[in-house]
Image (cartoon, rainbow, N blue to C red; front, side, top):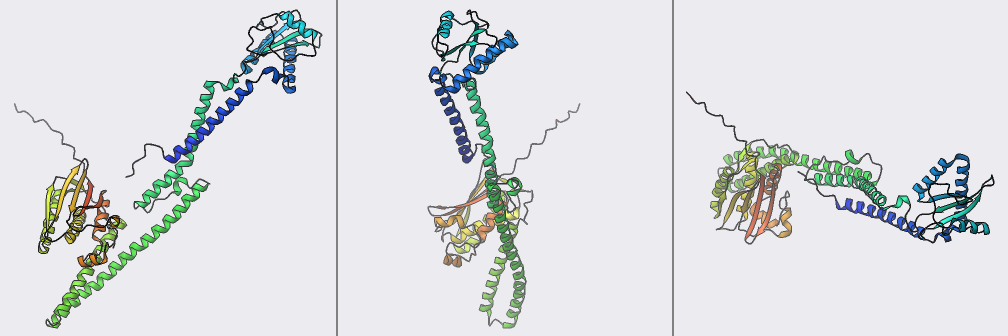
Length: 477
């Protein structure tokens, strides 16, 4: 069972953080540039042609609105200027009386006299009609088409202050929104890769039907092409493996019939030889039994790998099973000057097939008997930890070279050709044990000990049955 990941993948975090930092830095740089632009001396900027023309049009517009639409429209215009740009608008008549509700401070008469004396020089500047010198202003004498004269004045936002949009709360909101968008982009880019990763893992664990296309096949990018290439590869590998399994099964079945006929012919030869070819016939019988055993193991391995074997939902008393196998293995080991000992067997219940589990434990124990040194014993222990039964089988033999440990459960794998020939093994016993254990949802591994090899089998314990409800006894009166 695949355990879902609690934390996001490293690739997702890289994409998400990179995009978010990029957008956040862009917002920060843009805000800094606007602040630097706003911090420039206002008169210097306002003396430039486009800005000067815009301010002139601004003042003419205010006068036109007042004369054609009235005071309310002028106040609305001033209110919009304040809300949108932070600019205070003032309009005074030629006598210096304020028309707008907001009244400027300072010596208005001096400003009007100055504007009358120098009508051609009306640069925006800080002027005395406002209290405080930190904010720049603009003043201009406007003559309307009707001939009336007005003094238009405006006080602008504090130099260096950001525009209304670039306030700190709005900047933070913008960064948060950018984070959400980057998060969605990261999911869009990494979700197909996570699906591909889980499918590859599922395929590696033996599910040859695992495919990517149903999840990401609708995309039209390189990730979809990668998924399609994986599916093509998986189809090819699944076909090759299926062909190999069918070939093994067919060969095994075809060999069984000649072996049966060979056994009959062997018995007939014994009767007609009158004992003159006993040694040769015994040798033929021995080799025939080895081939028959090999065919049986091949058939068992093929059934396990093809999924033909099903685990029945029965409860297996594991300590009794192990004890039976230990007794049988000890009987087989005694003529070889070896022993098999059950050091400690705890009570364990597992769900599965008694015969399949027995075969797996037998293969592991017989492997230990085959390689343990004469005069030594194969030690067997059975314990449970949390929800797992742990069976260990340890021999006292030469062990296995470290590079070969991860391969000994592969079919026909030989650590040493001479060693396997001498022991009579063909390299299928541990493969069958490994397939059986995995079929029961368990795990098997081998590790070298100081004086031998230890094989550990872990199987999930069967859930404890719920206690039956107690029915109160009826009290007879």
